Structures are given as structure tokens and as C-alpha cells.
Image (cartoon, rainbow, N blue to C red; front, side):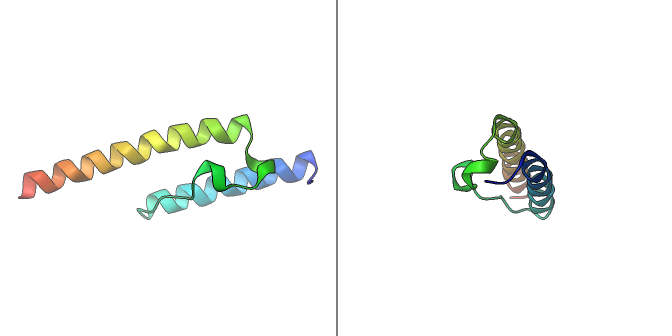
Amino acid sequence: MPNELQVLRDIDFWKAHCEEMFRAGSNPSSFSKLPKYLQTDEMKEYYVKLSKRIKAREAWLKNQEAKSA
């Protein structure tokens, strides 16, 4: 099990990775697929917020497609 500093570093790294994927139009893997040591309350909260952002982006894209059709 990684120590607390390693966990915090890995959480920050994973959040940055997820943000890059989101900006590129991709979705990161689900929370349940994260290593157990990263499945913290902080990461769960981040994933809930990210999920809302992904759904909002998908709704916006769907709306744009409907407008152009």
C-alpha cells in the first residue's frame, strides 16, 4: 500500500489525466476500475462532478446536432 504522500500525488496525477481526456472528448475509466487505494472520498466526489460535466457536454453536443439537422 502506498504511503499518504504517494496516494495524494497519484490522485493529483489521475485528476490531471482525467481532465486531459475530458478536453480531448474522451471519458476516463469508471471509478470502480480505479485501484482500491485511489477509491477515496475525494476521488468519488471528483468523479461525480466529472460525470455531470460529461453528461452536460453530451447534451450540448446532441443539441448542436439537432440544430444542424
